[in-house]
Image (tube, rainbow, N blue to C red; front, side, top):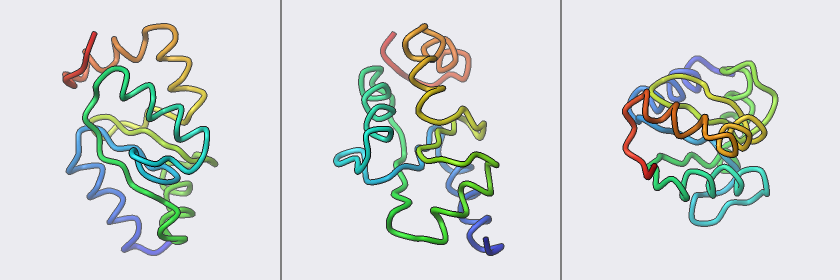
Length: 110
């Protein structure tokens, strides 16, 4: 990963309260895991920035090194890495995601 890629990732995270690095877009997810996270965020009416890692191979590999997490999608809230699909899905199902968003003062449907 280049320093520029790392810097670009950090800038995106810093400039957006909620960021989902994913395959595809929120309008058209390109894998089931990305779709599951988009659906959870959409259900909670969370406004988020989507970043399609399929458009840039450097970014796709870079985000994995940046977070030290081997898979995409990856969710960041207020600069904090939350996790991938399994973690976000579990948090959603238990209500923990709702609490987490509330604690981070992210507008959403409760």
